[in-house]
Image (cartoon, rainbow, N blue to C red):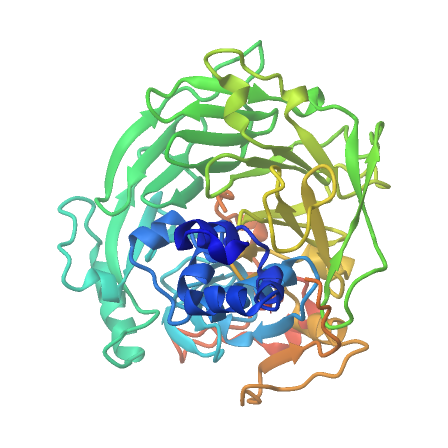
Length: 560
């Protein structure tokens, strides 16, 4: 019997049980019930580790929930939500802006950072939908691309520089770098914004000017993954240490012909501790950060025509818009294969899995991608790659819009002309929370009410966090589409104008960015935007014109 084993062995054995089985185990006998209830903190702490609800970094940092059992219950609800097995809540963050271009999310501090097509940058509270802090429209350029990680914002400006802003709560008391100091304009705006958005001593969501990085050449494609900023020009890629505001290395001649083919125009860049990833017009290249050697190159034409077609599925809860999709293996899914190019890539937070999005609606998954260029016995990509086809009945070479990667949960999100999808990889079938995923080791869900093709075509950004997916969407269309067939209720006391929370109420099933920066004169809508100069921080745009243009976007979230 379990209770007769040494306590350490018994508790270790129990920790491998799925969470929903722990309650059943307490009903087996009084002895088993006493063993679990007496050691409840240890039991649920071990369960949190096994279920990957907490990672090693959090443990080393001394993260301890008030109640491990409550923590596990909450994390299980989030995980089930990603699989369409728990209710979801939709929020409209109207205060983030009405012509939003790019967004970044701080999950732990609870705010969204948004840049605007009309210029400016806004930090918006996720829970209360209020502006915490902002930069004026005459400072952050129109269509600015921004990056954010661990308290640092990086965004482009027109003089080939990148501005770096740091959370005030982190910057205060820390010595500023001696190189790449912010210029006078940044310092003046920093003081003005602090004065305009006075807050309590916490200064949550407030930022201070930290550094101004002068790029050696025009480097429009950039990606920040703490502590490294990767900025790629046409022929060279530059790596910067953001906390120190110093360039640390250069990967030169990234266009050099390989098997007679150059990289082509740069569409997207990605970086982690070991590698630099560059999506070009002709293919994907992976470089070693140490030394800059070209380790691997993949061309779209090399991909097999076989793929897992992603098809609509009728099953799912009525209390959520996250709907599971059907995966059907197609040995000749060639309709969307030809004519596409690699437009984005992301590496998982664990650094083991790589996802590459083609313009034709294919997501190429490379689990344990380092095996492709292993020093001994490298794996051929055909033995490693599998492909999800999100446009099985389309021959359009330009159907994809955006690819995003989550944090420690290892999930990806993508947007195409047909919808927004969440991909939950579990290549080793170790999940204990939502059941074994179908072959090929991933589960795919779709946001069922966010499917208006015209609205999706104007979507400019997509982000995924631990418990939510954030996206830009035209406000006038989103409200009517998302609440169609459902009753919308304001909850948590937030019924002020401009703030919508739409919970989907129903029975609960008991079973479970590195894009090129956006500045381009051809994208400018200056003639169509009526901006008032009275408020230097909030660019107010004529409401009627916004409903008449496809570029009207605000921020929405679907959370669990």
